[in-house]
Image (tube, rainbow, N blue to C red; front, side, top):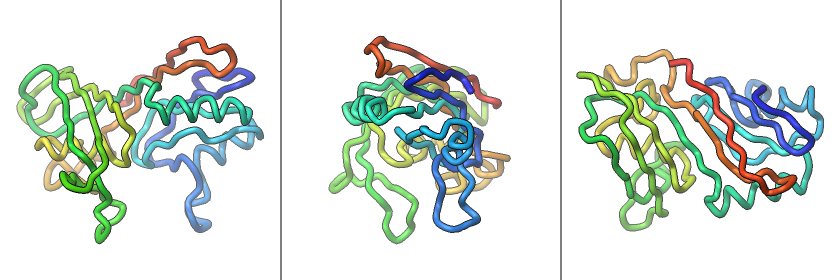
Length: 202
C-alpha cells in the first residue's frame, strides 16, 4: 500500500498478478480481488498488464471512480514508466508516434497499423545505455493496449523479458522489465494535484 484515504487507494502491483479477475477459477486471483478483502468498496479505475508492475490507483466511491475515470479518458493523468530494453539506444530523448491496432489473428498481440490504427504517442528519455541494453523512462500520452511494449519493439528496442514482442536473448529474462513508476492526477476530493511513485525492483 502506498496511500489510502476516504476516496482513493494507491498501490504498487506486483508483476505476474492480474489487475482484475480473468475468466475461470485459475484466473480468479487479482489485485482487485485482494484489495476487496480489506477495502470492500474498492472500484477499478484503470489496468496494468499482468506482467507489468507498479503504481495503480483505485477508487473507494462511485463519484471518485467517475472523477478519476474522466481524467484517464481525457489524458490528464501523467504516467511514467521505467523499462529495460534490448540494445543500445542512441539519443537522449525522443517521441514514438505510431498508430496501433489489434493483431486479430494473434490476439492479444497488438501491432503498428499506419492505415487503420488508433493514434498512439509515447515520449521517452534515456536513463542509461550499455552495449546490449538500455534503461528508459517512458511517458505514454495515450493509453492503447500494449502501447509501450509495441512502441519499443517498433523502434528496434523491445522490452526485455516480453513474452509477446521480444525474441531470442531479449526474451530470456525472469520477467517483463516494465514498471509503472509514478502517477500524477487530481484528487477527486478537492481537485488538488497529487503524485505517487514506487521504484522498480530491477
